Image 1: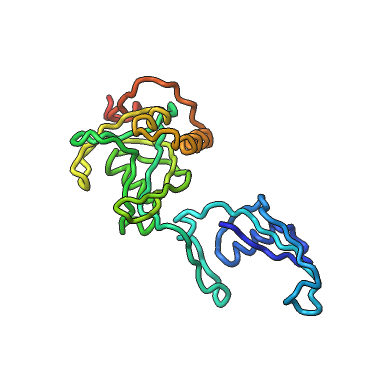
Image 2: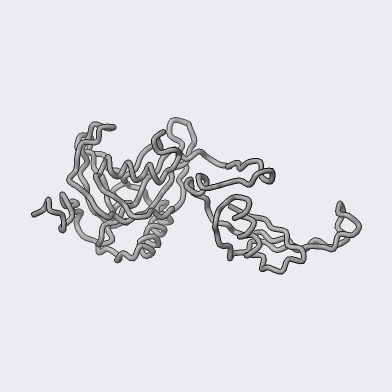
Length: 247
């Protein structure tokens, strides 16, 4: 989201002015600290009235709007007619889900042997929210519950000649239960723990995965989790150690 703000004889800081306008016009509470462009329009600029005093134009980096951000947008009456998104439709959501030791969850289909991160396709029950998709798919496929997901970005997907975007998130696993049959796929998944680097090797992503792995480790640090040591892949226990099901 790139935001443009005109400031003319405004007593507030430009960052405060744009934060106020975004709150009033979109209903979103956001902070703006990174200025992308500052431009001066002189009083003699063509196309402006004769009494135009000149103005400073500021363009701020507003960060990326998630699907949940779009869902929270509230437009004021008679001022903003609508909001339009540009880009590819987000049809899938997948997550790097962290165990307490900093490793991530990898799912192996016991019928097909295929490996994947937890996630899947946005369905009508998700109301257009990839975060809801991730939570639902993590439970259906892996029987894990998540903390608050961090948005990492999007991947361009051209499957079946239909371009779309896959949302990528990172989240901590807060609890889990023994694996169960995923009714949507008819499979029960083995749940393995691996370092992010081992995961990229398992998927044979190659050098193009470097930026994504770096983002995953940044998210891990934000979540307060340790850097994992490389070790053989191990299965997620049937239930957390404190669960009565392990007693």
